[in-house]
Amino acid sequence: MHSTVGVIGGGQLARMMIAPAVELGVTIKVLEEAPGMSAELAATGVGDYRDLDTVVEFAQTVDVVTFDHEHVPQHILRALVDAGVPVHPGPDALLYAQDKLLMRRKITELGLPSPDWAAIENAEELGAFLDAHGGRGVVKTARGGYDGKGVRVVDDKNGADDWFTALAEDGRGGSLIVEELVDFVRELAQQVARRPSGEIAVYPVVETVQKGGVCAEVIAPAPTAGDAVRDAAGPASATTVSDAAREIAVRVAEGIGVTGMLAVELFETRDGRVLVNELAMRPHNSGHWTQDGAVTSQFEQHLRAVLDLPLGSTRPRDPWTVMINVLGGPAGATLQSRYADAMAAHPAAKLHGYGKDSRPGRKVGHVTVSGESLEDVLTDARGAAAFFE
Ligand code: ADP
Image (cartoon, rainbow, N blue to C red; front, side, top):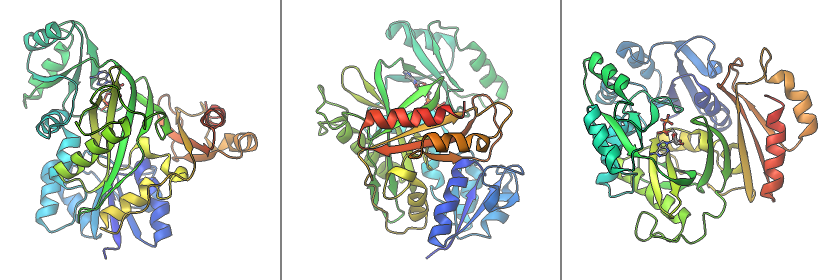
C-alpha cells in the first residue's frame, strides 16, 4: 500500500485531510503556495504549483499526489504521470474540472443533461443565443472562475465584450460559454468517490444554498429528493431526484475516469429535471457535512480513494445534517475568540475553523449540526454560525 499522500495546495481542503490521515496513520505532506496557509501543519515546503521542478521535487517525496484545488497546469500533471507518479485525479479527468467548455462538451457527449449551452467567440454569437433563449443567458469563462467569479447573467449581446477582449488580448483566443438561465427551484450536489480500481461509493444528494455565488448552507440529505419526479429527470431510468443525481454522478465518474472525490453540482428545475452545472474533483464544500454527519467523511474517503483502499460507508449518522459556512468571520477578531460563547449556547454544534484571518466574503470556517428534526437542526446551526458574523 502507498503510505504517503502528497497534497498540492495548502487551503482548507488540504487542512481537513490532515486529521483523517493522522487517524489512519497515513503520512500527509502538503505543498503550500505561501507560508502560513490553512494546511501549514502538514506543509513540507512553500512552492509554486505552476513550476515543474518544484512540483516534481515535491512528488518525489510522496507515494501518490492529489490536490487541494484544480489549478495545477496540465503539462505538469502529465510530466508527473510520465515520471510514474500516481496522480489522483489524473490529468485526463481533471481537465473537465479545469475547463468548463470541455466539461460541457463531455457531459453532452456522455448523454447527460446540461442547460442549453453554446461556445461563443463574439457578441454576434452571444446575441443569436440570447435571441433563441428569451433574451437572457449566463456567460461563463471556460477557465479561472470560482465562487461565482467568471459567471455573469447577461441580457445584451454586448454584455460580455470585456471578457471577449480579455480573451483576445490573452493571445490564446478561445471561447466563452453561454448557457440558458436555468429556472431552478434549488441547487443540489451529488458526491461520489471512485478508486483507481473502479469501486464507487455514493453519498446522499444534498441541497446547496448559494449567496452571491458562494455556497452558504448545505442540507443533507436534500429534502424530498427521494420523491418521484414529475417529468423524466435526466437519465430515462431515473424516477426520483436522488436516483437522477446518483446516476448522473456515477456516469460522470466512470465516463471520465475520476479517482478520488467527485462533486457534481446540479440544478433541479421547476419542471422536474436535474441538470449538470459543474464538476469538482476533490473534497468539496457541499460535502463538509460528512465530517460530522456521515460514517466516512469526504476527507477520509478521498484519502482511501487516492490510496486505492476499499471505500468507507457513506451512510448518514443522523436523519439530517446542516452545514453553514462562516463567510468573512468576525471583523478584527479570530473565530476562536467567539468559541466560548458559541459553544456555551450551542453544545451540539461542531465548529470548524480554517486558521484564516477574517476577511469579507472569505470562507474561514463552517458549523455543522446533526439531528432528528430538520427544523431544529437548521435553527441550531444558524444560531451557532451567527456567533461568527
Ligand atoms: P463557479 O465556478 O464560480 O462556482 P458556477 O458555474 O457554479 O461557477 O456558477 C455559480 C452560480 O451561478 C451557480 O451556483 C448558480 O447559482 C449560478 N448559475 C450558474 N449557471 C447558471 C445557469 N445556467 N442558470 C442559472 N444560474 C446559474
